[in-house]
Image (cartoon, rainbow, N blue to C red):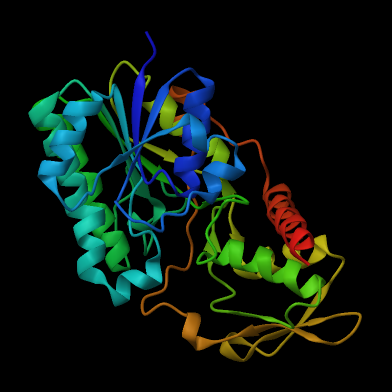
Amino acid sequence: MAKTALITGIRGQDGAYLAQLLLDKGYNVVGADRRSGGANYWRLKELGIYKDIKLEYMDLLELTNIIRSIEKIKPDEIYNLAAQSFVPTSFEQPMLTSEINAIGVLRLLEGIRQVNPSTKFYQASTSELFGRAHEIPQKETTPFHPRSPYGAAKLFGHWITVNYRESYRMFACSGILFNHESPLRGMEFITRKLAYAVASIHFGLQDKVVVGNLEAKRDWGFAKEYVEGMWKMLQLKEPDDFVLATGQTHSVREFIEAAFRVVGVHLVWEGSAMNTVGRCKKTGKTRVVVSPDFYRPAEVDLLLGSPLKAKEKLGWKPRVGFEQLVDMMVEADLKRLKKEI
């Protein structure tokens, strides 16, 4: 008999790739989504799986709704990928971010506990838990020090998952995922913003891209591979928490340079800090401008994860490298824009 999986955040990058993976494995996939007339399912449609997914209108702000949905769907596995996932927005909307990213997790866990405690649960944690990192690389035992309302709310979600696992013997896992990107990434994230900007500049649709801290370093991997790790966690005999990362770090500056190289543009940099500009080496045209508007109130300078435990216990390891990931994202936006112009 086929398993049933309930995915919150089904419209997001990870939700779409996870749905595709589970469908390929023969699951019945139900996507939990807030009731909204203008819901955009472009990722599911781009992957060609929209018609294969059942949708359940469920809101993490409403416990009774969650309980009714779990009773109705009877999922074997629940993957909580829903979140207010944009760090800058969390500084503007800290209360809403906490309601969704923190208390929303508690509502889900309580719903599972009341309806069927044997349901397996995956919580999407984040490398932002480490924030001002206390050691390099960061691993499962590294002390947490979040530097944003987003990170702080996610920290509650992480620990309440651990608490329910230990208190009620529930099969609940947290995946502490470092930055994972893809052509399905949202425009509000720097990687997709850059990929789209490079494609737009290439076709003459814009002149330059405005960014924030060039020196911020992240551990960037391919999202489609990371959802495999999520699934693997729920197939273990005993629940546990895992870091998923590449073990390599690159700066925003490096990402920008790699993205422009895809379209044959090599950058030269002038100035420093917030006065930095990047010019095309061949034409001298300004292509990158730094603005303080895109700096965080509290910066996270370096995130670098250790995937050692995931490799040893899950048999998971990243395969797509940094350059390949950047190429993939820019090429996808080049193809999208080419169809539109």
